[in-house]
Image (tube, rainbow, N blue to C red; front, top):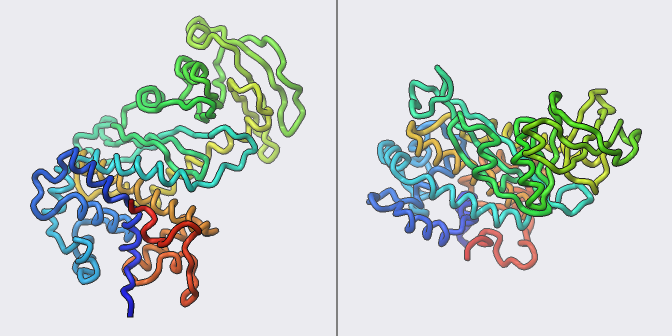
Amino acid sequence: MGYEPTVFNQLFNFIPRHTFQKSADRLNADRYAKNFKAWPQFLLLLYAQATGKQTLREITGGLQIHSPRLYHLGLRPFARSTIADGLERRDSRLFEEVFHELVLRTARLAPKHTFKFDHPLYSLDATTIDLCLSVFDWAKFRKQKGAVKLHCQLDHNGHIPVFAHISDGKLHDVKAAKEFFSITPDSIYCVDKGYIDFQWLYSIHKDGAFFVTRAKSNMDFRITGQHSEGGKKGVLSDRIIRLTGSASSQKYPARMRLITFQDEETGKMYQFITNNFRLAAATIAAIYKQRWQIELFFKWIKQNLKIKTFLGTTKNAVMTQIWTAMIYYLLLSYIKFMTKAAMSLTTMARRVKDGLMIRMDLMELICLSPGKPVHPPDGHESFQMVFIL
């Protein structure tokens, strides 16, 4: 009888091991490690994410039960103190680099967004992850509250986070966008009103990209023309404007569109500003509505991944766990894109959790077709080893 690897074994094979090790060597991630090196720690953290383990005791207990199936992976029931030391000392940048490496690979398989235009479409936003200040004293956010912020750029091709940055809870969203996010020409960036900084919006314009956001009620402007007639698909007006505020007009000296839109379902009125003069006004409104996908992304990772309870209390431990959670999200997305599974990511995560230590073909688990021959996608000899270079 042939050897059938566990689902977990197949899952970790999607990680480019050689890239992981190159980053580990460059960051000296194993400098002080004797038995608990970077790769076993990473697998252990993926195991914790996949199974929903919330404490070190739960992790070590699970490893003890499954140790015969994990030994060949380099995993064993490590002591809780050993795991805690690794979380505290091993540089979290290692896991950040793995995340960004996986982004490139996952994005290649992501399905295109549903709009007819060819512009890449991104949404930018941030979510606050609350921490107990008495335990995480380095994460002071407010007087009696601790927090870190996860800033993300969501690609609407597949709804995957293509860039992320973790900061302290005090960093303003638009300041993070200015410092850490790069602009790609011909792309469309959708943001909420919290990102309105006309100097930053003008930098998007100068870089040959486009922005879509809601107008603030106190915005000073004058109408210089009409871009198109209203009355179509909820569009009440579509005007060309220039800013007239003493500061805003200097920060954004170019013209822009002001679109007044009424949602036919709720009857609510919205005003959008954009520097895109090509797309229809109704399309601009639909783009902003799609910004809700990044809110759904934040809600999903908070409900399904372990980024609200932490295995360590240091800043490095918290960031390591968040980066690992983001990596696991990409792994699930990659599998979904590759298999073209119609199920939700939540259903897929539950199936992987339930079958993690089963010796079963991963594609068979996802497709729920036991006993039926499963053929890998065209061009790939082995589904499990697609990512190994």
